[in-house]
Length: 308
Image (cartoon, rainbow, N blue to C red; front, top):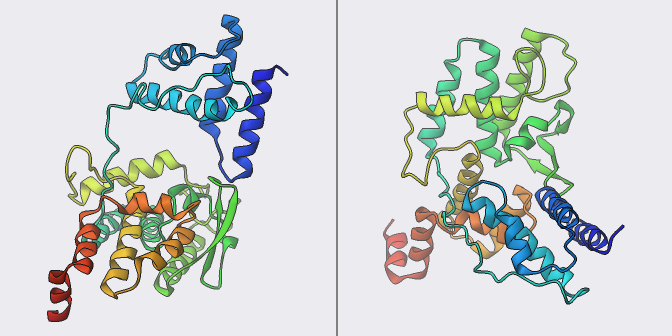
């Protein structure tokens, strides 16, 4: 193993021991190492890293992402090899702003579920209605719900395999959510009988759902429900059901005068985030939360709460 390969291997092993999956990082660093070998490059300069980062004919955001992975690695590797340069933070900035989370109203969620109920095939209708309801009620990642098995649900608690950080967590569900999942299971068994898949949610063929199919159907249901983008950067997405759950939870905490600093770590654990900082990104730009927070901190807000 070359010195560079060893550094890459040690870096990935260290980061993974802290709970990071680093699939994209491993791919980029492997490709960068291959590039160095092909070009017979032995000194890792900023120029070399930029040349590699902009090689694919892709978007500036893609170039920024590739260089960002190298920057993170270079900061660490420079401690062991001072000849490895570290790209400055402002180099190859991503020009596009991050998408704004689309926070669904309860009426919009109900409309999407109602659209799912209108699917002509009863099992498919029940599958998507129940899946969407679970995502909205529990804030799961879509992949977590798709990967869930029937045996993972017991006594009102769903055991979730968190592949992002290689852990599992327990997600207590509301009794109404448990009841809906029970109704779905009975309908599924009534229609399909015994199926080879252990999946909680299955297709009409009795197989586990596929993400791209779920995303496609959800997009059509959103259109049928008449839900429109808020702006060019704020469009209704499947993953935004998770954002909506996080925002709704914090809004509920504000309504009941609970301490946000105490609620946030609990919410972070429930969502399966590595730290509350990850959860904070879900919340920081939502106008409803900003308004609630401002009301709690101002005399006007105090007056509003007293009068209400």
